[in-house]
Structures are given as structure tokens and as C-alpha cells.
Length: 215
Image (cartoon, rainbow, N blue to C red):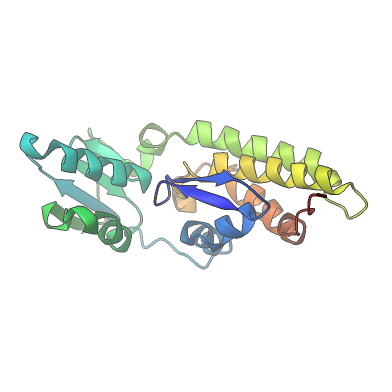
């Protein structure tokens, strides 16, 4: 089985059998990435601002809120101010309900946003670790190239399983920290969509049943 450790996009999957791909595929974040890659999610060119001010006496609530916003890949513009090109309202309400933090938020939407005198569109590489994420996708691409030859039915089951695990671990490493910024905000050679599409093309092999151990 796969055990989910942590909630939301920043949670991670602990691998215990072959179902990693199915768990990731069912996750709304993966589904959003798929829709975005195929042009079904168009950016409305609006920035969503999330602001909060929580007193020191409620530090645990404040830390929890920051952790949620970070997990949702919102960019920190100031200690109590985050921004995202995506509407995070539904995700925030789902995440914050246990602590009733929704009442502490101020939400706003704008089509013009500057930060330290520069439009935020020009600051994406400073606000998000795009270089690191790009490198992870390039690693995923190399892993697929190396491991896909081991996914055929003529390969020993244990080797096929190892190849699936290797590919999906590399996918997790790239996808989980990815803010899935709109294409307008990314470098023209951004490797994410192509690498993710290569994973989708391997889906029949990645969700194949793992070998049953002999007693």
C-alpha cells in the first residue's frame, strides 16, 4: 500500500507497494497539472493575495497557516502576505477548517501587482525555486529514458517494479514542490509539461500489478 504522510500538495507518499502511481494520479494536484499541460486551465492573469495578522499568543495557529500557504506553493511577499496566480480559496478552507483560521484571512484579487518596485511577473525565479524544480524535471526525464526499457512484460517482475518505483519517486521529487505556474510566467524551455507527459504515456506500465511474492 501507499501511506500518505502529511496533507495537501506538500504531503508526500510513502511507498509500500505498486499503487503509488494511482494515488498520485487521483490527487487533485496531479489532475490540475494534467489539465494545465493540455491547455484546459487558462490563467485569467489575476493574482490572489492572502494576508493575515495573528498575534504572538496564537503562534501555533500562525505557524500552521504559513505552513499551509507554503504547502500550496503561495509565494511569501512579506511575513503576513502571500500571493499566488491560482485561486486557493477552496484548498485553504479545507486545510484551515480544523483550526478555524479562515476568519483570520484577508483575500484580494488584482491584475496589477508589484513587489519591491518590480512587477511580480518578473520575480518568479526569486519567489519560487524554479531552477531547482527544473533540475528535478530534467532528472525525471533522464530517469524515464533509462528505466522505461525495464517496464516491458519480458522483464523480470522485480525489475519492472523497481523501475516503476524509480520513475515515480523522481516524479514526486519534481511535482510536489512545483507551484504549477501558468505558462506565461515560466521560461520558454520549462521542462515540466514534457516530463509529465512522458509519465502519462507510461501509465499502462506504471499501474501494472506488482508481482505477488512467493511464500
